[in-house]
Length: 267
Length: 357
Image (cartoon, each protein chain N blue to C red):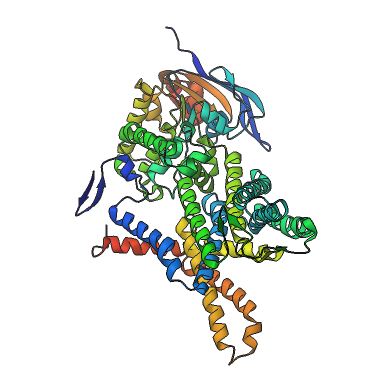
């Protein structure tokens, strides 16, 4: 089988906080159109890795290539413009703003209004606001089924819906690569199923065709959604492969369940 | 088309939903207000009320930049009088020394104040909170107490102050002389500034500022260049300061550094705290409240002076004490400011008699 080209290449990333080694030479390659999951026990460095890819942390060593271009030294906002979007573990939304304003902020990089247009408003700025409003309503809020919440203040919404707004905001960037940091955390079963449905839609529908990097603890979701899975433990990558392979990998089982359990399953 | 149903107003286009004045009632109300402010009030008001209105307008224009920085962008500033002074002195020097027409000098004042403010906004790229407060205070002392007092004031050997007798300033054939002339200038500038601020707040620039205020890390991840937008906020705040300064020299007989003290910077922060952060209503209500309450206090003191002769001399202290007390009371009992109370009253009227959702 012909494998699609690599969109994101991480080469030997080292990241330390003081004396703590968060990432110890992690390398991986994500291909176009994949759902690539990163799993591992708590504190394994999964979120740190996302932060490095996204530009919020800068690794001490190693390179990150996006579509073949070295982005290791670029600030986060430049990477967002290149097509890397993310959601956050604890929904870092603008809580005092409405759903619509949150998603509008996701459109920031696609808007062109300059200071003069903005001051005058009538004319170009208004036209742009209306065009993007239509895009947000018809492409994003409809897709994620939150159209009825458009004027609600985000901080007042239940957690499951906040997670969805977070996804909507990231999607508004029309990214090529979407980093999802525990999108299922704290959701009930029904909400998990909805979220999984949205992620599949974003990934598979050619309208979006977004490559996803998923950090998640819910193994059922990871095994069902992902094309490939990488396992981190104490900042090291200990395994990588298709979900079925990872499930039966003794090293992974040992990392998750400990020495004796690994021994038990092997028997 | 707009649908008016018993359950509320429903819009059928995005344009209607995003309109500034969405319903006919709001349109009528706002046009009525504008007609009152532009036509009726200047005709019926006495010179005393006109000069009071001018003071309110000056406070609004001055507080606009502070509101932009603190209320919209979350960058606390305690030196805004410096940029008002930069505007006032740029305008005064250009008019008196180089005989530049007032409108041109006005524009130059806006730009100079904006750039000057941006210069002092540079530290905001690295520091936040208390440290930023210190750097903005430095702006105040460097600009007013050092540069303006020591150097700018001495341009043209005028001594300490720049004399601007009424009639010095004119826009084309219109000579700005009386309080009524100043009022017309003021109300036009306030309307334009409020409109400009509203427009900024509803486009990508204002939203980027609010994103930085609420959550700078998330803003950065959305592709917002935080440093650039902070500097833009300082620039625009300076421009508003320049407008305030260049306008105010029309009202002054002489410009001197004492008009732009640090306590005026502090006063402006008090104005927006009492009015409410992050809205034009906050700026306007705060300015009205602070100016009118202080004027009422002055009147009470004048009225009581025959009975308590020592009051007259201590009015300054009464004023400062009232300012402090007002801020404490507002922070305790109305931390969201007058604008929030106004919003609540409007909501109450909207929902009456079914005040539940």
